[in-house]
Image (cartoon, rainbow, N blue to C red):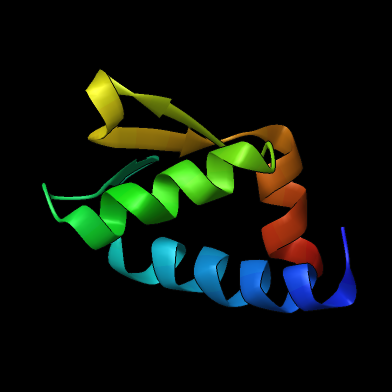
Length: 69
């Protein structure tokens, strides 16, 4: 991961945690931007996407990423 990718992922992960968090899960609330955010985080192994892209959950790597940034 490049420094530029990391900066973008830090911002995206923080926004997802703040706005998509639903208990222990992430819910994009049927917003296309939220769906794209979950997909992007999943590409880096930070989120596991479920329910046809509507929801997700942080992977262990994603939790570590959140805590370290």
